[in-house]
Amino acid sequence: MLHPRPFYYLENFCTALAWLRQRYGDLLSDTEQAFIARFHELPRESAALLVRMIGRKGDLFRTSRLGYAEIGCPCHAAAALIELGWVDCKPILTLAELGRLLRKSELLRAFNILGAGRFVRKSDLLTYIEADSTPPRTLEGWWPDAPDLIYRLGVNPLCERLRLLFFGNFHQDWSQFVLADLGIFKYEKVPCDPATRAFHTRQHIDTFHALFLCRQQLEESDDIEALLGMLPPSVSDNEWLEDRRRKLQFRLAQCCERQAATASAVVRALHIYRECGYAGARLRVVRLLERLGRIAEGLQLAAEIRAQPADELEAQQVDRMWPRLQRKAGLIPQRSHPANGWFTFKLVLPLAERPACLEQATGEALSQPDAPVHFVENGLLNSLFGLLCWDAIFAPIAGAFFHEFQAAPADLHAPAFYSRRAAQFARCFGQLDSDAYRHTICRNFEQKAGIQSPFVYWNVLSEALLRSALDCLPREHLKVCFGRILADIRTNTSGLPDLVQFWPAERRYRLIEVKGPGDRLQDNQIRWLSFCVTHAIPVSVCQVSW
Image (cartoon, rainbow, N blue to C red; front, side, top):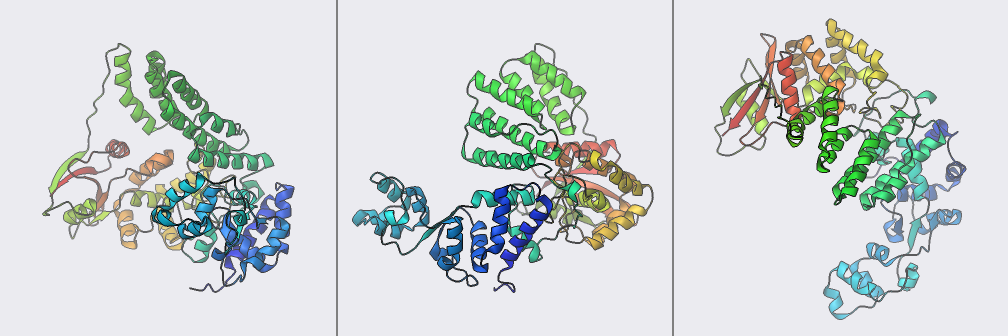
């Protein structure tokens, strides 16, 4: 289908460059400033071709595959890019690069291979050619009669830096413009001012880029020492950036731990975990101390964690390790077997085999005309929280929102997420002291419909479900559940019971976790069930068979 604006992608890229210049003009390097200025001076077809190449994978392109109706001849459009040195029209190619660009039939022609060579796989053909090949060379050197040209995009690293600077993360790319343009994704409009920008110094930009390169290299290499050498130093003046650095350091420690075949390698992983301070690192230290036979040290650290756990997950996991560590230390294990506390009942479905969606089938079996059951899983309580606290979640806090394509604050999982918005969340939670919360939730359900949110499951919510939930869930229950979600967003937004059953006439409800034969409760589900029991929230576990 033809786009009504054939150069829409060029318009989007120009918008991004203008935004970068306006927001980070004082931090851009001379090279970046010069690129933006020269880009705007390009002929439209040349600029469009460059954006098309930037949006595609890799940096090598065959001219026969650069055919775009609105651009016309790619060789003509590339001329200005070649003159600027942004595109190399005669790049030196390795055999591997040539193999990725040419089809098997073309390789046979290029190397004049006849006979049995025609019947081998392309990978085997490249291995055969490699045995005889000379060093890398241009396409003409490999294949003088090639019917095509190959271009190498030389400004890829620079454009990658601009992409990272614009989005402030590693995963989004320029296609976000298109998705928003087509209405596939809708984003909340958060006002941005200089105080809220992601990067405040050039060093911040360089550090973020270094993290990106290190992360890329981690996908391709397991040389831990080299990767640690690439890791930038700690960032004392940018909290969200330091959190990203620690997360990457934690991943490096995990990689080191997987490789650890000797005691010295385990000690190396131990040192990295201790240094990074990321969530979960303390428990990894305990496990490695146990692996090294340093039980007394492990037991002492485990005791410190039990006394002051970072969150419920850490408390749950260290309690599981505690008896084993005590036994290895020669002590009598102190085991605690708290009663479950939640009601469990059985249900036999009149079916010959397990249904495609066990939870859905269970809900249908339990549903009654005066007590409907909805399959909501994590979608209901999270959505109610997200709708009530919309203004707090999308508050224009420094280091939270960097561009107009964010579904969530950049610091959503940072330890200080709540404290940085304490006043805003206090106002939201204060509405639960009266019926004001109902108005806010319903208003945001109507006004924010379809806008991306880290909490709201628009595919689960309906007006009828929302009305039943507000009528049947006491505000006291909502308040404690919302508080738990906010206390640890990373782990407490999952593990909620699968079903909710309402008795509208009686204004009451119950949550139901569904388990089939052989299914075990997961840790996060156990934590939610225990929490519900503690706070007198009606919850059950349904053991289903058929």
